[in-house]
Structures are given as structure tokens and as C-alpha cells.
Length: 209
Image (tube, rainbow, N blue to C red):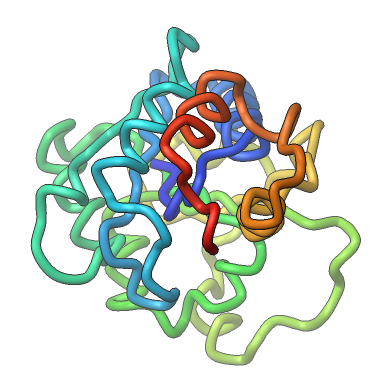
């Protein structure tokens, strides 16, 4: 599971998903747009349109799935609830992984039912090697005894572990910067998949952001 607002989906999101798929030998990476992200502002484009852009971005990429399950629920998009639906779908012995970026990881103790996340899945943090600030004390307590140093060790159990993973590409693309460029009429070529860029420009999305 790789969640996010995907507002809009860009090549950094998609390349990270491909590299997660390879590094962890996953059957599939479910990219799940949030309808109402609890700890972020309201997205600039509707959930249905963000899903449509995500599907365009993924295209026929093997192993990537545009998963609409959070858009079908009312209320905030809590990751624990989403993982519970995945666990129910794939069964108690399936090895489930939730991937998140380093910035989101640092706020993990503030999430809704953070302990439940580990009951349902492993967490994989896409590391930022250039960031060395100490972790918040509540987060240190939450992850105590959970961290492993290899994907093979992580996958020995269905859930409960934590792995920090440095991906090869680490594309420094920001959805905020993409929106600013679109709002100012500047080029977003090579930041987005061509099909995503074409749909955004054809519909004028983000032009007033």
C-alpha cells in the first residue's frame, strides 16, 4: 500500500512505487488516493479526478494498481481502516506492507491508532539519507523493537515490522511545486507522465492554485 493525495500524481510517486515493487519483491503495489487526508489540507482536485489521473499515470505498468477503496468511504481516510480492508481481502497470513515517506513517518505517533498499523501490516519508510534529526520520543517508543535491516527479515512475518529503505532514484519532485508551476503557466514537462500532463492542461486543473 502506497497512499497519498496524489494531487497530482507525478513521476516521483510512480518511480518510487516501481522501485518498492522491485526492492521488496511484492506481488503488487496498491496506490491508494486519499479522499479526505486527516493531517493535510483539502486536495485541490476532486477525488474522482485524482483517481483518473493516477490511472493514466500508471497505464500498463506491471505491478502497480490504482486502488479506489478510500474514495468509497465517508469521512477521513485513516490508514488503519484501509489496511484493515486489505487484510480482510488478502487474509491473515498475507504479508502486507504500508510504505510512507520520511516526513510522514516522523508524524506517525500522531496518526489515528498508530499501534494498529503494526498489527495489520509492516511499515516501510522511504528514507532520506540527508536527514539526520532525532526522531520524536513518542515515535521512538512506538517503533521500539520493530525495526529490521533487510527485506527478507521483514517478510518472515505477515505484519509488525519496520524497515527503512533507501530507493535508488529518490526523484526530488514535489506535487506542491507542480501545482505552483501549473498555476503560473510554467512547464511541467518531464515532471508528470505525458498522459497526466495532457489531461491536466486540457481541463485547466490547478490553473488557479
